[in-house]
Structure formats: C-alpha cells, structure tokens
Image 1 (tube, helix red, strand yellow):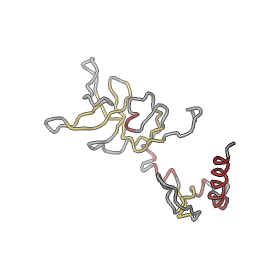
Image 2: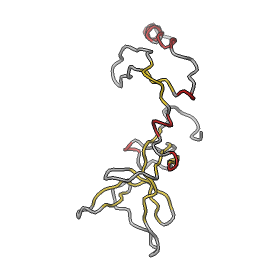
Image 3: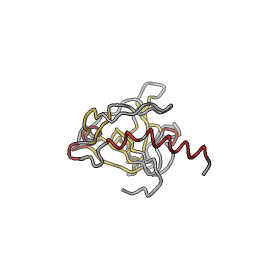
Image 4: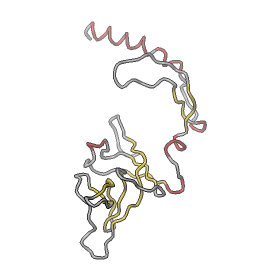
Length: 164
C-alpha cells in the first residue's frame, strides 16, 4: 500500500469517527433515524449525528396503502431517466396521472411503463421510453389503460442479487 493511500485511509477513518455515535440497531417499528444534516453530493461536508426525527418508510413512501403495489422493473429502456432493470417501483392505483407522470399502462393484457404527455391537439397520450405514442394492440377489442402511477423508484446502488 502506498504512503498516499495509507494517509488517505487514516484521514478517512478520523473523519468518520463521528459515525460511531450513531445507534447501531435502529428500531424499524419506531421509524428509521433521519439525520438532521444532509449529505453533500459533491464536496465533503462536516457530519453530525443529530437525529432530526424518526421516519417510517411506509408513511413516507406510501400515501394510499390499500391501493399501493410494488413492481420490479424488467429492462433498461428508462435508464436515461434513472430507472434500471431490477429497480423496485411503488405504484399507486388511486393516484390521478398528470402530464409528465410515469405510469404503469396495460396494453393488450401486458404491463409496461409509459410517460403521460400531450399530443399536438392537447389530448393526453401515453409515450414509450423512446417517446413514441403508445398505441393499443392490434386486436380491435384491446384497450390501453393506466393501471397506476409510479410514485417512487427504489434503485439498488450495490452489486448483488436483484431479488429481495
């Protein structure tokens, strides 16, 4: 190990020493500890272990428990929008879609993700990941419907299995 790397690691250990003050085993029944200090997405900032409040992920992520479903994403067509294969979506069937909403659409009996948009006449249309209008299947009886609105996407940041 090079001297620069060793020095970097020891400095990191000193700066992270405050993490030892955190509870080692949060109680999910009370909610998860939400730290008062946000984490910087750029330059490192001083850390603080002050807990702002306890946050229930169910309360935070799910507005209508009786109409909320979890769905796993298959495919990377929406990767540019931050949604990847294996991501977990929180879908609210009671929410009304608005322009720009990501929705789960049912087309000819198949689920798919679509974005709500407007056509040249101001009418609502569903767009595929490639921004093409989503059309009903070839069967004349086929219908294109919005099954639910995607409220949250949970994206894994570490390598490993995709199943929970």
